[in-house]
Image (cartoon, rainbow, N blue to C red; front, side, top):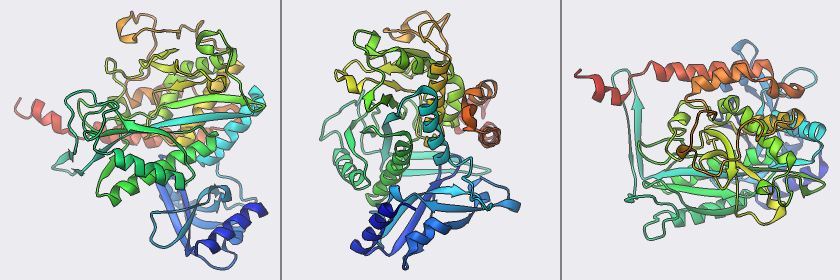
Length: 459
């Protein structure tokens, strides 16, 4: 037990008159769950040593006949939850099995994230990976949706309606700039530093908030926390936030672009002045790995049926498995505006926020590691560099992301050895993931769509 972290937590309880302790974690698909405990003497010590039992079958982790599992708080993740009436100290929890060794659960995303970072150090010989997410989301003033045997519909109302591209729109037309200001202050209370915020392209209330870089595990935690904060803050304002990749027809989709680099001895390990994008061989190998495994990665970076309504060619969507400097039509963009060598990085643009962030980031890192191990040069592999809009050039030899979730799962079935390096992604986890996602595909595939009524009802 870390006595320093224990003291910090106990001091927080005393100073803030904490009445409840809350443990949070996500299930396999990314939904957030929590359990609350009233404060009593030495509660933190007891939670670390004993944990809290829960039903893993209700999270989709285990079968009902063997479903007992344990939640143990990670004391480094402590934060005071501003959305609880009773003063509440909240933690992200690690999931353990109930065997005598209290073995970490192999499908716990936080376990995978730690193991992926360990693999990075061992295999590549660098210190840490650093990630900077961009959150795109819509704000609606009213939402109604339902699906029944005899009806299916959705309806959203929005306070904004621009005539055309609303990127960086200014107030008074940017209705939610004050909302984003307040959201940034709330995220700061969670220990999340915002780089900037602005109105996004979508003409019906699309927003963007980008946060600063952090290591893999902390970034995945911050993705969950940011969504939690925005969902709750919107409800306080009688508004509705969605990160759905494509919530509206003929409107811009929501992505979760991920900026990425690695460090060695505290220095950026990608920089080499004068190379294309100032990106050295190591950086190019990471790019090559992510692009080569891009189709299989899609099963984790874009794991919803709705994801592929955003990833459509011709709509400035990053569907081409190419890279280039400043090229937003490619899956990977090396930012052109970066002048500081320590900020040399690339941006993987396909992901969206329906992803389980622990699995998504870990899978991406393992793809990059495979690129280094096998010296996958993106130039020799035919991934670029390309500095033109991919929609305007010949595509005979170009490779693309899957067109739907079923194709992504097929790609994963054919290409998953890179995920199993060091036993990080187990066959059990991959099988469970595919089973869950195939059920989603089946549900959507057998359900009449409202638009089909327009097409076929009177045919």
